[in-house]
Image (cartoon, rainbow, N blue to C red):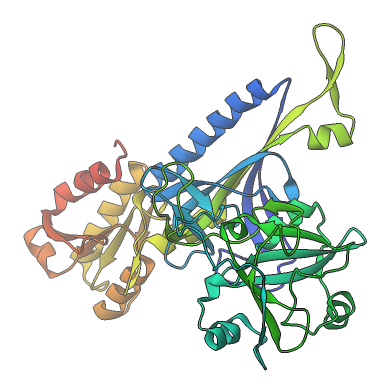
Length: 435
């Protein structure tokens, strides 16, 4: 189904990209097994590819987080744009992933300096990673920060490298708790005995589970908070000074991290999400007891797929990828008009007669034609024409007395003189519509 939808967008932004009203294509599929779902999933993927390619847009398909919709696999269709909402990581081998899902992998080797025992160091006033790094003369990536959360009625300590940020989406997935939250400053002091900025894994109460990002496994000796004001510990070793309950992928990846497929560095780009497809599995069918009878007469929950495509968002994406200093440069496939007719002197009978004749021929061949017959100066008309960005423009001016009009290509700026009797056929051929 393709419907106009509305959402209670708190801050509409990016023009038509993030508006309260938008047009969306939605589809769902129901299957007997995963193999059947996979066939449909790939067919929808191919259809979305064809749509974007016909529109002439540069795009990538990235592995994505399913988010609150759920499921075990999803992909986003991202139109590349410098001002895109989403940050993407990709590799020359073809691997591409949304930043929210990307796993952080580095080739930096072991971090820190192991010691026979950890050393307590005074760090007066150094409560941030930057301050500790400067005070001790160690890189921020060589420090491990301890973040305390409340989830499921218990406290957990999350360890991440000092130069990395926790990925909230990964955090929710790892702890299976959308309501997980940071501890308040007073709660942190109750748990650790020290103020905010000096938390560490050594000496935490027995009931606090310690979960570390996988990158922390590369540390031989850590700099961590000592759970006491103005104090840190150096040379801390997991397994000797404290126990890590488990390792998980918890932080945002970044440009330069290693590709999980080929091991080369990832590069970053920005994109606009225009489509998203999901393998939902039996999440919803099981919850709603939506079942079918197989050939043996046995009940099974449907295996489901979900597919969305932002019709109006494609317009925004096309504009973000096709513009210049003068305005929009519409791709022919989705331009609101194929050609703009620009009679310069609307009081000239020969000019208007030629313009009307061209309009009839072009419209009769199935083209969408825009006629600017306003009684305005040529400069204003040309400026507006560039701003609107129709792919082709036929200017009917003084040369009409010689039977000549001017064809302008908005994308390249190329100008071509044509006999007025040949202009319609030329434009119809360029637009790809048979007359």
